[in-house]
Image (cartoon, rainbow, N blue to C red; front, top):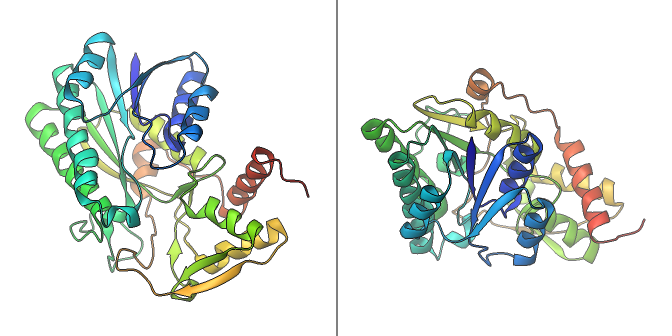
Length: 317
């Protein structure tokens, strides 16, 4: 059985590809190597996979290419992780996010239903919940007031997925991911940016006095959840995939200060309109349907992230 992983040159996708290859599974990768962040990082992720996967450089918006990929390979499962990411960058780039995250997803769903794909796993985001008042976030909470184009485009893809399941019986599992981090993480995200700032004596913008809370999910736990979803055709399901233990930004930075042995320079800033005050995952459904069992607490996850950073950038001491 062959699995198509879109966005597998990225952080989560490359780890999922490595996980499936380790199990001896057949993998096809579709990734356009978008320069949103350093493409050399993505090429290194692909190199890490060796020759075990078929790599196709291309865009999920390219309908002819997508159809050809399905025609040329016996794809029965899809892990759709390709996306334009980043809440704040999306604010001034709504059209781009709509094109990639919504239209690109629909192109893949359409090819999947035409080629009898058994399971289509769609990566979504906890950001769709916006500033919901109920804590922790549950799948039945309203996701219809997103705060930026990024979650809006992801929510639109969720709705299309429901339509494709209803009309064509395509098994679609929506995974709402919560703040995934770990070794090799994206350089534009807080876990890596914080290390950079502390080491180089640069100020860290802390919104609302550090009161914002985030539910950080270690990448290996996230990959285990995605892999489990690929094995389970469930009609149409929305499942939160997160650790379930939010911490404040202040506590997050303090963990890194202790690991690195250096104080951070803090610069207070107002909370942007695009930022929720908290992300907090109720992962009951993931535990019940996927056997999801996140094992890595934030202290251990950040320690491993720091150790990776030290080795990768050859930092002594």
